[in-house]
Image (cartoon, rainbow, N blue to C red):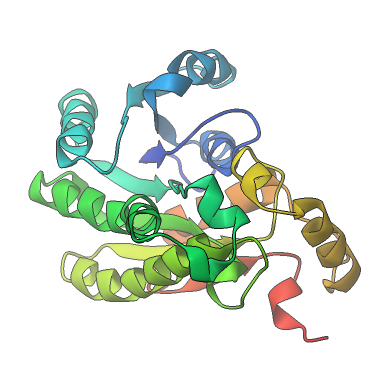
Length: 256
């Protein structure tokens, strides 16, 4: 098991369909001590779900737009678990109207909200974790992104711009985290039927296109994305940082 003896924090579990849940399962299967966070309105649902992973802890991180919420969550984790070996950032949100309308109609408030929750929260979380000296030497950070950061995907709109900012942030964070011998990478996952995906217009068509065009002619699962995440958490990926790893059946590698 490639994560034996490691402690990893999975931030952003919502339900059994969420990609973060796939990551929690994979990390657990690979021997990690798993620590999960979720929003307050998902707490009871996630707590029930975590019965499938005995010994897994759960904490509320309700609003990543508030530094005090992040700080309180990380402080509790540090007090109860000490230093950690990995963090998964699987947190994103945009207003529905900013996904359904043309991008040119994105409101200033909607743009700022998507950037704050989906991109800046990663910086805030890592800054506080570093200040609290929570990260073990060699710790690995993983964030989730999507191909809509690289190409214009109808219906992804402001979230694509937020994910582009997230990916740029990862490259700059790789430099800073490298100073303390820690790594950071992102997994660009193919489209998956999650609660968040329901907000994307004609999402079913995107799944059909991937199945038709991707070299492997299939969509990906939360298990496959979770396994890639577990690899990036592990010492087997000790020379990989600042990268965006596509786990999308090869869709991003082909043209028309």
